[in-house]
Amino acid sequence: MSNKQPALLGIFITVFIDLVAFGMFIPDIQLRARLFSGEGIGVGFTLASFSLAQFIFSPILGRISDKIGRRPVLLVTTSLAAVSFLIYAHVNTLALLVLSRIVCGIAASNISVAYAYISDISTKENRTKFLGKIGAAFAAGFICGFPLGFLLLHLGNNQPYLLGYTAATFSFINFLYIYFILPESKKNHSSDHEMSFNPISNILKYKQLLPVFGIYFLGALAIIMVDTTFMQYAVHHIKITQLQTGFILFTLGISSGLMNGIGVQKLTNHYSNQILVITGMPIMAFSFILLPYATPWIPLIMVILALGLSRTLIDTSIVGIISKSIPQDMQGGILGITLSLQSMARIIGPPIGNYLLGSYPPAPYIFSGIIVLINMLFFNALYIRGKYGKT
Image 1: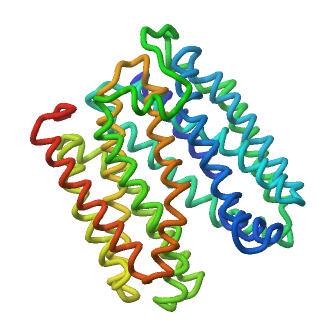
Image 2: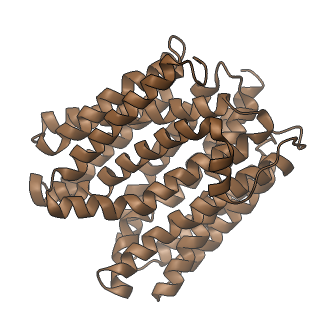
């Protein structure tokens, strides 16, 4: 085993534990927000508060990690995660719920630090392969966290105590793991490049990355519109149960995890990131468009599998392109911008997707497919011009 492999395993475990704790709350957040505020703006504000905090703090924490190292930031964010979960365990008002989500959003901004950690321990040649393994940790964490959340809610009689304290325990274990075992990846804490702590100004400042930032944001917007409407579409229009829909989403998580853990590693041995993006985009676009017309079960499962494989391939490859296009001492800050863009998509995507769903049920999926097709044409033009190299 190379010297980099223990560090890779360490950050994989860190991210996995982090995402298990985060994924546990997905079954409960919407229902608890509705309990405190009724249907409407209270639920939307609660969900948006997490993404807004992540949007603001991802480049900040990433940039701080560029200057002082990755471990200190990871230690602080795992502590914040534990605090947010303890607040959630005792939440009895909408204000406390929103506070818990804001603190959790700040803590979850450490994803940019995890990406930067990978850039520290990898070379340009194997970076996308390593990023794929972290993507597999994300997927595996969600897959394990989602059913665990259902179980803990059931055991806790739908009260948040058991859920919150279990997640806080996971975060405390994560803190101890980082403190005692995870090595620091960044040896040189100096930086010759300056960045603002304002995410918008950073996005505009690095003009050479604006096209690929735009592609990344539009792709995330398309995915979010589908993710935040599919449960409703499946139950009310495809006429399948919530349990069956959960099985479909589990299939999506499994396919994404396998592609990240195995597929990306194999494919990057033979093809550049750009080729993988160009290959994945038409598959994703037509998967979106076909999704509302796919009937249970085999056609629907096939479309979901194609969607899971293509979205993972595209996301990991684009992050790889960005990482290889920037100096080493800016990895945390710039990769934090990509997470900010994803958070921005989470803020504006759900209302757009749900509006389209109410107007014409297949519309969110057709519109998302069109966005990805436009992205494909734009990316092809950049590739032909040789922008960002052919890595």
